[in-house]
Structures are given as structure tokens and as C-alpha cells.
Image (cartoon, rainbow, N blue to C red; front, side):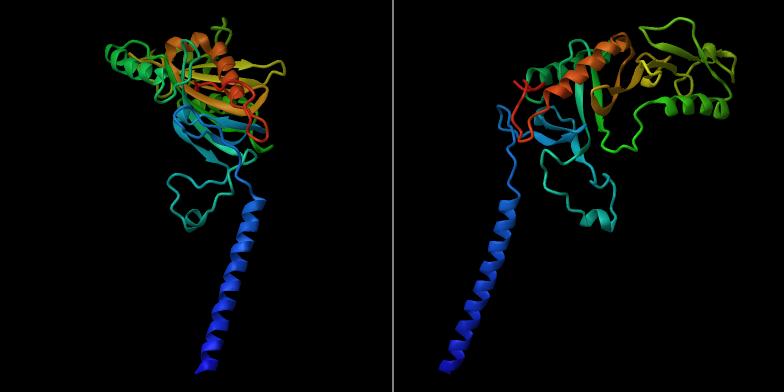
Length: 290
């Protein structure tokens, strides 16, 4: 009996040593992957971090309107086994971001930040301007990281596809107009006439106005499609940022098309304000954070 107790005690000790050894290994691994420094706002909310356009960024949590998605993350509605088993790598300033969104005010370049004055402004404008048909000065903005050399860096192909598809599917052509609009080359759908009725367009399905801007190398870096009818006319504004490997998609009231150049500069400055050092230290005052 005594020998059995001794053997049991030895087994327990051996198991304990193995567990301790396992814990030690896990601790060693944890030490090899230190938790990065993460900035906070005045409410204690932690920034979202990652790598955007090849640069480490720290994005204030209060400004993020659609969550930060990282490269490799499963899609929102992906219920596959692979998606369920996916384990994201540790989030660091080197982990590439795929996309994220925020809300931008076109009239002054402000970024909406929850719990701040801009949040109050947004709700006020939403309640007072939209019901009476006044231009809503806020634009939904999504930033896409160009993390792969295979991703297109111009809208040349998209422009060509729009021109060809309208001719094939809708039986009309876009006509380049003589005069530019706000510095943009303007293409009008069939000179403003719906070919099915020989009357001015009455919907925005096929006949939206098309605007492009080419850089010094004749590549299309800005492409904008705008509604032509309805009380509230919207523009979908897509552009690349020259010194930041990202592309941006925005939707806003057509009234603010005239501000397209300033809008692109402001968005570039906002993204630049979120660039930090490799260890997360701030370089500039972050847009959207007081």
C-alpha cells in the first residue's frame, strides 16, 4: 500500500512538472510576442492599429464607422469551416489592414468621432437637413489598402469597362463633353438622352454623369459617377492617393462635387495624421481625436 502511494505521488509530481514545463513554454512564446503599445483617446478607447499602404497606423476608435478588417479575415457572411477555424495573427503595426470606414464632413474636412462635437453635429444635420431636402454635408468613406502588387493602381480598366458595357448592355455611348467641370473631364450618357424614349433621362440606373481625372502619366486616378435625377442626387467618388498606397471610395451629395480636389487632399491629410512610428508613437495630432 505504501509503495502504491509513493508511486501515485511520483506520478502527480511528474504531471505537475510537465504542466509547469508547458506553461513555461507558453510564457516563453508570449514573451517572444510582446503586446504592442496602443494609443487611447480621452474616453479610454484604444485605437485600431495595423499597416496601411506600407505604413504603421493608429486609427482612433471613435472615428471607425465600419470595423477595421485585416488581410485574410473571412467575409462577413462566410460560414464555411475554413472561416470558423480561422485564427487571425497577432495584431501589430505590421499586420496589413484590408479596409475600414469613417464619415467625413465635406464642408470643413472634419472627421466624425463618436461622443465628440462632430457626433452631435452629424445627428443634428441628419434630423434637420434631410427631412427638408437640404444637402447633407457628410460622406461615407471607405479606405482600401493596396497591399499586393497585383492590385490595380489606376481606374483605366474600370473606365474602359463602363464605356464598353453601356454600349453593349444599354445601347448608348458616353460622349466626352467639350468643357471640363471643376477640372474634371466630363462624359455625358448619350448626350443626356435616354435612347429607349428619346427623352431626357428619368432614372440613375444607366445614365449617370461620368467624370475622370488623369495624372501626368495619363492614368485615371479619379473616377466619379453622379446621379442626374431625383431630389437628392449622390456622387460615388473613387480615387487613389499619390503618396499613400491606398484607394478611397466615397458617397456624398452632388452639391459637393465642386470640392472634389480639396476633399482628396483632406482625406490624404487625415490618413497621414494616423501614421505612427513602428512602435506606435504618435508623429502628428490625430484627426478625429481631441
